[in-house]
Length: 387
Image (cartoon, rainbow, N blue to C red; front, side, top):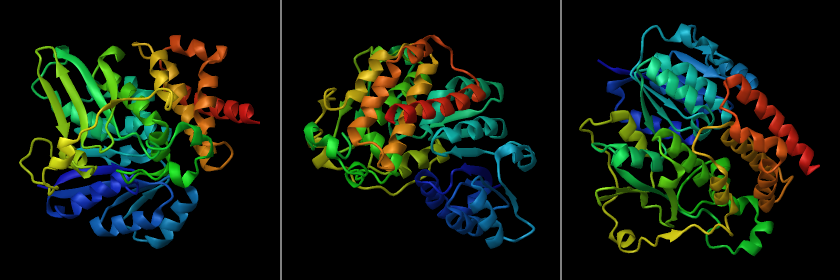
């Protein structure tokens, strides 16, 4: 019997990687739902390739254009996620949640009850809404697997181990596109330089987060939430080749080092086939990289974003949400050439040090409406600051 699955954000890099894996094993899978936003042409190709019967496309113009291309009465085309109860009559086997940004939070939460297993590749959803995700995972008995290479590596290293036996977990960072550029030149960094990641093919937003090292701050917050650890048990090591993804040191003296090629298909493949005896073709063991791992402590003067971790408390709060939302808007403003590269961190630091935002470190994470309302307020506040 074919396994049934859905892909939220099938036209993004994670979604397309999963589609590539599924193309080689079409006989064993049936895609029940694909979703996208603006890239209706890619979504159209995927729909035809897998004969998908349900499509959600959230951008209104793209939705109308998609309906003109796909005019079959056998295909249900929706413009929002209120249709999930119509689409799913029974629990499916697997969902990949890879919609980028805060827009991925609500669909992620809504679809949990419809699947036996959910793989989440959305940082914003985990950071801002983990308390809501965790609640529904338990309520609907849904299995969760993280897809980020670092978090999947931690997840993999903890199999057969109790989290209480962990002494320290190190997440690795490549150093990003600007690792070898002096800090004094950061002010004049161009968009093309900031998105030119040396190891990974990623979207503009996450590439810039890598350039500021903000992505690693987010990953520390994610790891803290997913694995229920205190921040003092998590650290960052700069590792330019990105061959090692996580190092777990246990209280019994043992250390697990998880390595794999710089290829997101590996954690995606493993989240899909989890513990099944399936083979993915990968490169041979890279001895050159293993013989020159080149680990370093992260430079907090060059990458001041890392200092933000010190401001975070072990209890969940709305401060983490504010950091995510503010960074999202600041990166957007940089891409629009309204601020320079250094301004991203300067304005973010200024914002979270304001009296009105410091109090959020004592506030519990809210519901989805609270987060969306805060998102609108933060964006207006930042635009007021820069003007």
